[in-house]
Image (tube, rainbow over all chains, first blue to last red; front, side, top):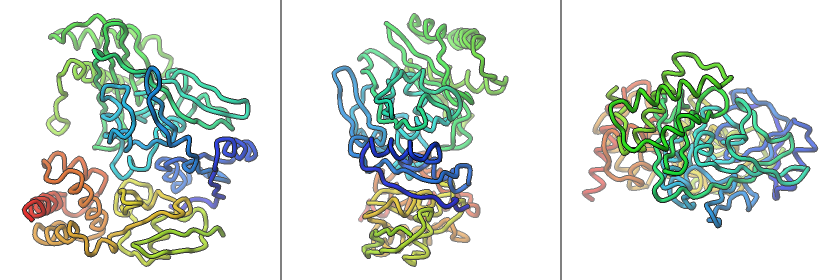
Length: 287
Length: 156
């Protein structure tokens, strides 16, 4: 339960972090909050030659409002979002998500950028950033790069980041005032990694429905999104209609999803959609 | 070996250490903080919970070398803290421990919960305690102890 030996370097600037990554040729790992990486080091699932700590880089700690939303530096902790110390472009969705990541002791140190860069399929921010149409930004030897959140994760633990790219932050556009959201995750116990997750953002112009903890990248559900955009109230048939659109959406997905997992994802989707209509999900303890 | 200097319970501790040393091992081996218990060593059990710059953290998944200049507080450093004093009393009163292995982490976490939320519902309390595992008590005594402490502190 102790890591392999490694060198530790504290990078003072983004360019220094990129140079260090490039010079270690794939044998170095970036560390932000370390709340996923250090467990992996302890378990020796990860055994890099060097750890490059990026938490002392001032730009990565910043957050602020932009002309159409908000910017979050990669090293912004879940706790700062939970407590409302950062701008909220999401009508309360981001603080709600942050408050339910792992445990308080982990939220205090874990970062949004670290979570995205690691791309554990069960990570809450992977699903949430797709639902909020975020843009992920990085800098590498070739200069700056960016992409939409839905294009960022390629597979489990695999992103668009190149071997010497450093994720610098993300931009999230403001939700409209009338947009409504809902989110639900199935966990074996509070704070555990989710077995399934869904987040729904409903608005008259355009809705989003995203499945998470899929085992791979988050999955957008285009037909379900169209259905939700037109849905004006939650009635008796709403759950089964949503289940049907989700099943139809999943036919176009190459990722293998077992029947049990599909059931879990459907439960999350229905509850997230219900929540967007103001219907609170039943307490896990009473199910 | 690289050097790290940090403050532990008010005292400056400076040591040459291996980069891979966890804060938990640093606290136990170099700062004589034996309240820091190691259960799972991957951030799941909560027995090693301490405060870094006043914020709750897991010392088994923090690298000591990364904490240059940090202010670390363990249960030893909270000896005279009013909330901890009441929690100690309440854990005694309400049978909040059996073997005691999880107890330091429970106390540091319970202090944080009380300071953040004051008196709270049993449901909320159990959620906030989900990251601290106890294999003896079944949690009923721990939950009762924290509620007892929160109520007593409110009356003070």
